[in-house]
Each structure stands twice: as C-alpha cells, then as structure tokens.
Length: 559
Image (cartoon, one colour):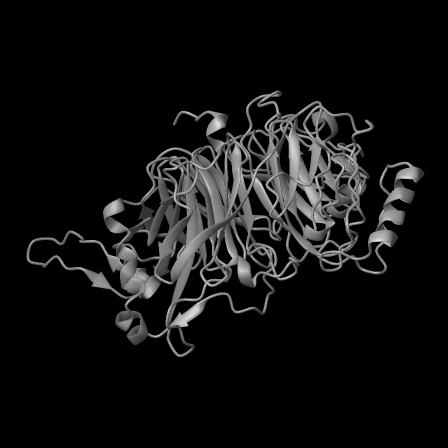
C-alpha cells in the first residue's frame, strides 16, 4: 500500500472521531505526534512503534546517577520547583526556558525542540524533576525517540532523544525495574541501549544520559535489532531479537562491553541454543530461531513461555527456562508480523501478510480460530485484559475475550472470542453421513484431535476446518497505514507507521471524569498482577440471551 503524504497527518474529514461497539462509543480524546521538522528515513526507512510506559513513584532508596547537566541548570530547576510548588499529582511544576512559558499545570512541558537543535544551545528547554508517577507514550520516528505524556492535551512530545549514527526501531519498558533502569532501545545497527526513563525526562538535552550499551557497534550481531522484551519475574533479564533470526539473552547487571563469542551456526534451519563460557560475558546465551528476521516476540504473563514470529511465516512457542520448543505453526501466506498472549496464557494471537488474525491454543498447540476483516497486512494485535463482557457474571463456564488488531489498511478491528460458542465450519462427510454444523468444544475443530507432539512445527490447516471469526467493529482510524496498538484500562492507543498517535477513550471514560494525574493508567501487557482476574465468565444463558452477546460478533459495526 502506498504511503500517503505526511501533510495528511491532520484529521481527515473522512475520518470519524468515534466508533461504536456493543457496549458503547469510543471517542478520540487526544492526538500525539512529533515535530514536522523531523527528517524522514535519514538512516534508512523505519516504521514507528509504540510503547506505553507506566512510571511508578520513585522509591526512597533508589539513587539514580545525576543527569549530565551543569550545576547552574540544576540550580535553576531546584529554585523553580521551590518557587512554583507542586504540580500535577506528585510531579513538580515545570520551568520552561525555550519557548518562554511555564506549562507545569498540565503536567507536561516541551523540551528538545525541533530535530537538529543542539543540546547545549541557549534555546534548550528545562524540566523539573519527574519523580512522580505517570503514563508515557514512547515512540520512534526516523532518527529520534519521542516521549509524550499520555494524559496531556499537548500534541507535541515532552522529550526527544536524537541518535546520530542509526535509527531507533524498537523499545521495551519494565515497570518493575528495581534500579530505575527500565527502558530498552534497539537500533537499526543492532546496538541496544538501557536507560532510566525518569532520568531522560529530567535531563534537558537531546542525547541519552547514564546509559548502558550492549552489542556496541554490532560487535556481537550487526543485523537490525527488530524486537526487545523484558523477561517477567526475572529482574534484569531481557531478550533482543535480530533480523538474521538470532535472539540474545542479556542480564543488565553484567557489563555490556565484555568479550563474548558464540560458535558458528552449522544448520541455520534448526533451532539451537548456545551459552557463553565466561560468567562475565553478556549476552549470556544465543538462540538461533529461524532463517530470516524475527519480527516480534512476546512473553506470557509470568514469563514461562516465549512466543516468536518471523519472516518465514512461523509462530514458535518456547519454554523459556527449559530452552525448548513447545510447538509452532505456519501462517496461511507470507510472514507473520506480530503476536500477543491472552492474559491467562491460554491463547495467542498472530497477524501478518495473509491479512488474517489467527488464534492459537496453548492446550491444543494449534490454530483454533481465524479472523477475517483486514484488507491488508495485520501489523499489530493485543488482548484487552480490562474489558468486561456485557451482562457478565461469575457463574458461567464460558469465557469471553476481547482483542484488537490494526493493519496497513488503516483500520482498527475489535473482536470477541467465546470458545464454547464458536461454530465449526461445514465439514465433509463420506457417503452415508450427513454434513452438519457443530458447536461446543473446540477440540472438534478438525478430524485429527490428537495433541500435537512437542517440538513440532505444523503446516497451516485447511481454512475449511478452522472456525472463522468476524470483527464486532471495523473503523478506519488513521490516514497512514497502522503499525501498532496498545490497550490501557481507559483507552485504546493506535499509532501509524509515520509516528502519529491517537488515543480512543472507552465508553464511560470521558474527559470530564478523567483525573489530572495519570496514576490510574496501566499497560495491559505489563501492569497486570498475577492474581488479577483478567477475563470475564459468562453463563451460556446470558450469552445467548443478551442483545449484545457473543452472537453479535458475527455482525460488523462499521463506523
């Protein structure tokens, strides 16, 4: 699909500012973007990705290194904070020097300015100490990483970080980081940086401060770093996927510059794991997963399983601790581009170049449903762990899931999944039998009901044998092709590949009842506690009797 002009970033008359769902209307609350002066693709073309970061209050015993600013700048910030007092929530008011206006009341100030500005220029803008909690949108565009305040009305970012030698292409945030170093940034050159989000917000410059550097100048792997993820329940461990099919396991407590070497890969078609010999080396392990790029990775909620999707079109699910392949399956066509776990770890979503969303079962190790509704590649998928089903109660046996997907067709689709209500497609019976539709247990999705053996990569099943889903909502949300989405407890956040963001507030969460503090917002993928109820149980009677029940997921609401 051809890219539209960047001038089309403004709200198009053809795009509505709301869309309807069975439970109510989602409304466009805010838009976020980057300065128009950002040069595009200065180090090669990159697609904007989105990370939603929930920054907690700074622990009293957490001592971060001071940002690299002059003592006079620090004095100005301290004096301004004492003079102006406390601002939004526990966040100090801002003193802004660049554009001559204080914007601390809204809890957001613009720093950095247009791309190409010097960090030491007299127009540098200064912010106060960001010690309070808040929710931030981290996104990349061309050679710059931007940070926006999710709850601010301001469209422009509050912070920009420039990379001179390579473009940032992926990032990941750890809200549970004990030492404050919580933000990973992967570059097109293969380099990986680890920084403190709070320190970046404190510093007025446009360069990274107090960063740890891994795979410096591609010394271990010089292919593009395509994806990053923190390992849940293992403080300080993260993984980095690369465009050559290798994934590396790092420990942030170890020196990222220590010598590290791995044996030559003998058979690039086979999954292999190699460990370093020295306890001081970092990364500590290399997983060779596939030929071609690893496009996306995702950990189950407690970190037991790791899912990867790649250029070869396969989903692979691993037991991370045991370093074993559990199962894998192929797309119907082309590469897989994205994946996401259900909050309970029972199901996986994938999307890719076949324009489909596939639902995979961990129990049965295969595709149990596929969704048709996109007209181009599916670039992002996510479960909504905060959504409550209509007329839900705790007495039923059926579980309903809500998930979303975005694609290069500029559309956001929302889907409802009720496994016990899925209708199995018409299946062929030999002469003498009668073709019927059947529902109920999804173990009857095709004739071979045996569990797939562990470690097996399966071809894609016939589409006639797998239940088909239709979206409950299909809404064109951007002018440009979409590249990702995140779901918080109050909103759905979408981003296009040129780095323009829209925040769609849920029904009943209008601006009038939003707190100025962002403390109630959390990211579905990282802020869900282990004991949280993440899905809603429905009784069969309530599902069938509700006017907005699961039966409605066969009808698409175009808005």
